[in-house]
Image 1: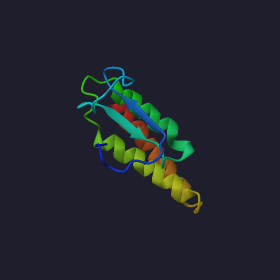
Image 2 (image 1 turned 30 degrees about the horizontal axis):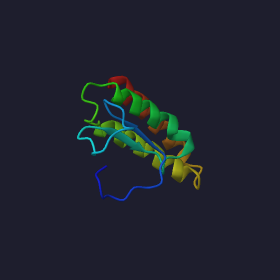
Image 3 (image 1 turned 120 degrees about the vertical axis):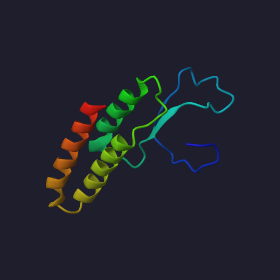
Image 4 (image 1 turned 135 degrees about the horizontal axis):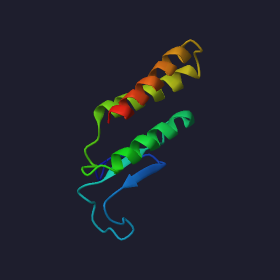
Length: 104
């Protein structure tokens, strides 16, 4: 997320090493998650991954593997809304997310 880039209406989760309520300048290091396009069934996985990332010393260095797994899971839920055969693949994606979270 950079100043001037289009942002949805959210919701967002944001983490920074100090309170953001008094920030007058955009901080250099921060972590954010845009949940505006996340299916309700996947929000918990996104939140869990966010909190795990926020607990790291270098919290701003996001894991692309975790992002890929979460995005794949979300895409499968979106697709599953229209196609029941995708449910099997969706369960495989959930297992993949669990495996990635265990290894991080």
